[in-house]
Figure 1 (cartoon, one colour):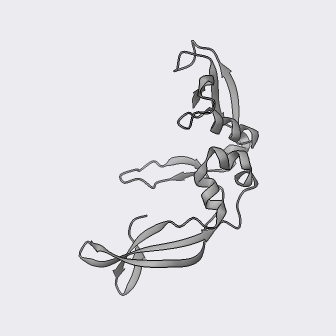
Figure 2 (figure 1 turned 90 degrees about the vertical axis):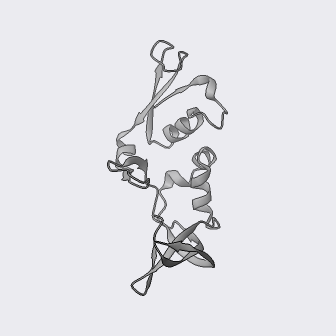
Figure 3 (figure 1 turned 90 degrees about the horizontal axis):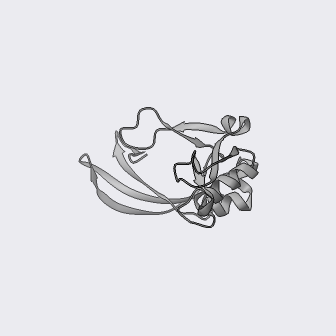
Length: 150
């Protein structure tokens, strides 16, 4: 991925995030000229480092996605507690609920604990906080509640 140097401080640019991951050792930054850049201005091309390649996993979390998207894996979430259940419209005719919960990432990679990475990736900061409260939709299937929206 290439980022323009003018992206510094931009919440929609990748420069700050790329530099944070470079400082964490997951990416390598290579300068590019305006001619080489898709932005037609000087920038940096980011590519995975050897350590970054070890930390990558393929995720197939979008409907219809067959190949998977490479993402950095920074740990495994462990359920802390279910905070509430709400009725949800039936899924495929089955009783369904929305379940809210909190979790922690006890085996978090050291790089995910870095403040610069958490600043560049607010979702990582939320995951590390242990107070983030996501939800899943579960349906009653064969007498058991099963997650249906993952």
